[in-house]
Every structure is written in C-alpha cells, then in structure tokens.
Image 1 (cartoon, rainbow, N blue to C red):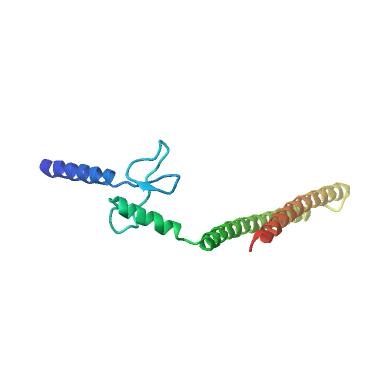
Image 2: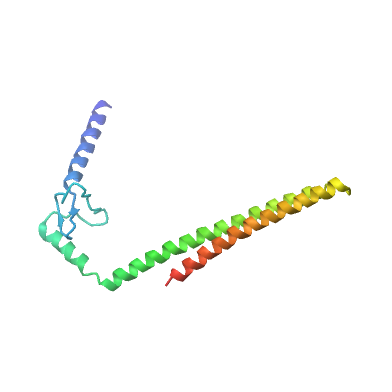
Length: 161
C-alpha cells in the first residue's frame, strides 16, 4: 500500500511538471510565445486544442488564423454578446417588477383582512381610515417602483438591435 501511494505521488508530480512546460502566452502585439511577455501575462487556455503547441511556426499559424477573422464577424459576435447581456438584464428587471407587484398585492390583502375586524363605531372608522391611508401609501410606493423598472426596461429595449 505504501508503494502504491509513493507511485501515485510520483505520477502526479510528473504530470504536473509536464503540464507546466506546455504553457503558451499571448503578448499585447498578438504574438504567441512560450515565455511570459511581462509580469501580468497569463497562459492561454489550450484545453480545446488537439495537441500542445511547441514550435514557433505553429504559434505563428495560430496568430495568423486569429487575425483572419473578419471585423464583421467580430462585430456580430460583440453585438450578440451585448444583446444577450441586455436580455438578461431585462429578465432580471421583469422578475423584480413581478416581485414588487406580488408583495404589494400580499400587503394589500393583509390590510383588507385586518379592516374586516373594524367595529361599526368611531374607533373602527378611524382604524379603517388609517388602513386606507396605509393601502394608499403601499400602492404609491409599488407603482413608483414598477414605473421606474418599466422605464429601465424600455431604455434597455431601445439598445437592442
């Protein structure tokens, strides 16, 4: 058992050592190289590549392929990503609006239920008036928040292409 553990540690260290040697960095000028360009450089994720890039010619091929992507495609991709972000923000706002409306309706139902217990006397009438004012305040607050959310949604929809 002890030998198996030592073997597993040895195999793991060999795998880690070889993976550290296969890093590729992309510099600001678009050139790929095996060594970091500067202290902020991070290795490029090559997990989707079939094999490890090791030669200068392979790196230059990758660089030329990346530069061959047309600007129209880049624009289309960036527009798509931006539109997706806007759609997600609209969905969040719509969910928030629905939550505000549900909360308003729940609070109003609670107040109506409390109002049913008012007696037919001056104290009951005063209490119902107080409940009506509270209902009015709840409605105004919710309506203000909903209209603000609706304006934000309308503004985001104008940004969609």
